[in-house]
Image 1: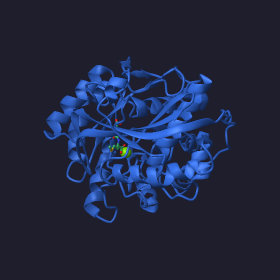
Image 2 (image 1 turned 90 degrees about the vertical axis):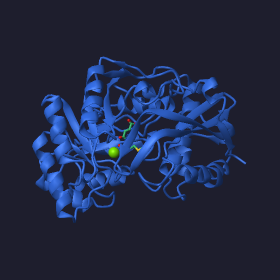
Image 3 (image 1 turned 120 degrees about the horizontal axis):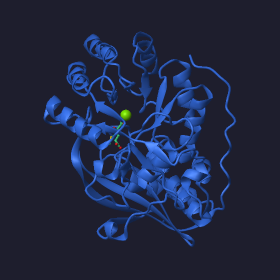
Length: 388
Ligand code: SMG
Ligand code: MG
């Protein structure tokens, strides 16, 4: 079990509130450049809802990263849109239209869950506040680097191992610093052995099961056991999110570190998971934990006990990616994250693109997120007003 003292982390500076004039959800559909298949499904495009908070001082943006169906977690896009319109936005504005990012947690404490929806709202308000203050999100959160090491998450390809190897070699050729391969029962130890043989021992390789394995099924566990021969950086979320004790049990048997993703929905859960030995690395997604402020709290909980973290992704457009890249620039984010360049996902991003430079992605320096959607990218967006 990890232990240690809390490092002195500076609290975030207080920013002036913004006066909300309108809150809207603008949705566009964007095709992925390659289909993305995980243990829970195949995606060929993304419906991308962007939350816009209009204020007197300008607009703030946040991205709703929910998938169309409740397959990654309970959240899904249509449900998130309703909870924003019927609960989160009215609940937030009931106490007045002058708001801060912190108000999303404090005024909405009685609404359970829906963290991806809350994250979009909190990010948009914080973006508006920071734009008004002329300060970047990375700066505000305490970034310690100007660019972040980039990894890439590779789905289970339709063409099996030969296509996986081709894709991975392409990404390595572009300069990505680590590869994360998706696995599922039936596509695990043997395909990963062939991938390891093809790319060589020097490539940082990790796998993500998205909770597809049953800890009570000996065949599932044995397939995961065999991953131990492949010198993987980590195995991400083998079992269902609530099965902390099963993760802890297998972690004592495996040499490969266990990294939790779906299980960790806030800083309290991060502390519990670490304390019971269920995880020795954490994938932090600001959208999964309810926004950038809780993401920093999760990072703080991990840093306090020496647990490394890295920044995950949810196939975001440049809007969500800007927030992820700012988070990945913080102290403690020492492993390359799923913060790939725009062209890994989209032919044309909704914002000015993120590009790969020597295996790194530059942290935006402009006010707020440092990225906003191009107006022409939103010309055909469906608009839903959330604040009446
Ligand atoms: O943004 O590059 C990305 C995707 C990273 O693999 C990725 N995310 O479980 O970590 C994860 C998955 C969830 C994606 S579901 C749309
Ligand atoms: Mg994951």
